[in-house]
Length: 88
Image 1 (cartoon, one colour):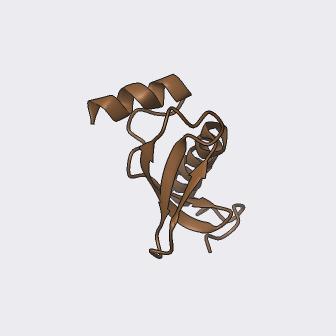
Image 2 (cartoon, rainbow, N blue to C red):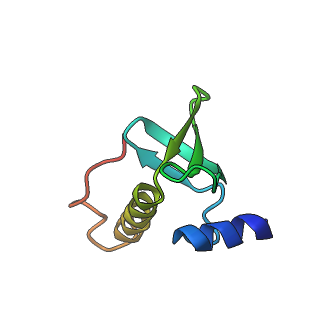
Image 3 (cartoon, rainbow, N blue to C red):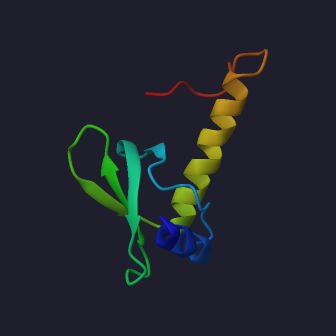
């Protein structure tokens, strides 16, 4: 959605991160929305196991997205990403 892309840009996140699946401290989650009124934890997520939703700081999500991109890039390399920790 265009509104999500605009809000993501305001938070310093990639515009196409809506629906992105990433691993956070509580397990695998999916980005489901943004709440700009929540200053500290504006990124809304839903756990992949259907447990419940959590809110995260934009910086934490940005780092997790960068790590997932690095993991995907390394998995396609000739070394096979052996130096990255395995996904749980």
